Length: 555
Image (cartoon, rainbow, N blue to C red; front, side, top):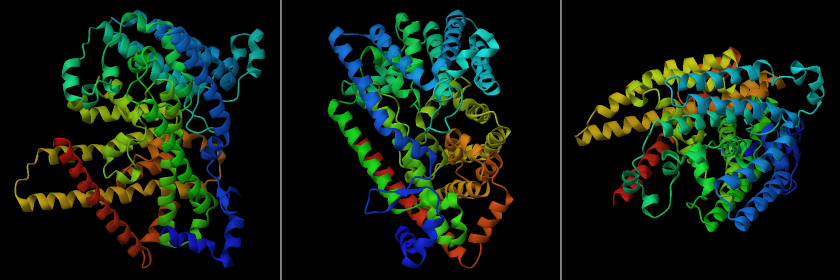
């Protein structure tokens, strides 16, 4: 299919016509082909890679040298990284780091004051949600509002806005991530003060990593730390730690403080090097992809309307895989520098997007560190699986508010919950059924494969909606929410969740009508059927791989 699409736009008779209308094509380095850099996030990240690498290389050299020379532990390394990170933030946000430090300092005082009281959760959440909303409403505040003698600081606001998702730089979440870290510090300290005890012996018996003499991330996260680890310097260093500040991944305070004291031992020097080489290999794949297949350019230019149903499917599938690979590269880039400095953060993309056949597995493997944060600090405190049907409403509402103050996002969140609840109930029923007969097992396996095929087919929908949306609404202000909301956009893995997605991101009825007319006709129906059958076979292959892996584990 990809080759057919490539050949169809490479024909000499139509190449000039297409290339002249495609947006974002720039001279490339591969065989004199043009490079598709129409995606703003990828274009900015790619363009800033040399300076980012030089900066983080210098940071790593300084921090590593000081640790080895002076044998620094948690308190010393937190000061080193705090100074380095503040220099980094001065470039990013200028004088606005005063707002970040002020809010963080008040949060620290509130946590220390109320950690042992029954009002702790109320105080912590109220404070953080209050500033999450105020930062957006007041657009990051103005120094002149605090006195005209401070008005000159408004001209020193740095390169990037500190309070919003980054629109000009990929996956920038800045203070949004700081908010998650402030809540993480609060709860980790609160649980330590409450005397929470993690059963370390039981965990070591079950964990293959810990059995091997290493320390897994879960162990670092769950065990309580000594009181001196919850200091102001380590706390502030955790909030603004340079390698993870721009885009994450999100790491818990306990895990961070443990590793700033004693560097992680999961990855050896060889392991970190191989991780970096795999990243370079992934970079080469996306470079080949953008030089050979102009999926995003077709989507943004609106030329997909002139193509067949097969080509529309290929573009949608290509855009979906491009977005996954783009975010994988961005998140793994910053995680690599964190690993190089001894801090292991959760992997945000642990599984390929083409190896997800249900909603739960997709949630766990797309922005996985954020999912882990939601589970640890919202889902479990609210009762976990015992109150799952109620928890999803709180979690999705928070996710919407965290991304931006938009009624469209709240509509998306609540409609997602409405259609997510039946899926939870169906999974609960399926788990309770014990199929014993061979025929019953075969029937259940086939129904699961069909369900997976439907899920994957509907996963294509967000890419189609994105294509339609970007071509129908030529409004660059809308692009501001893509970086933050795209993660949520791609988690809608069934037809009803696509309805919520449409409401949340205002695709419009004309876009839906066009898709229906493209696929539900003589030419489009075979394509739709072929898509479904291909995904059905792919789902069965996923099941066989999963079963083989489980058999290997049990052996």
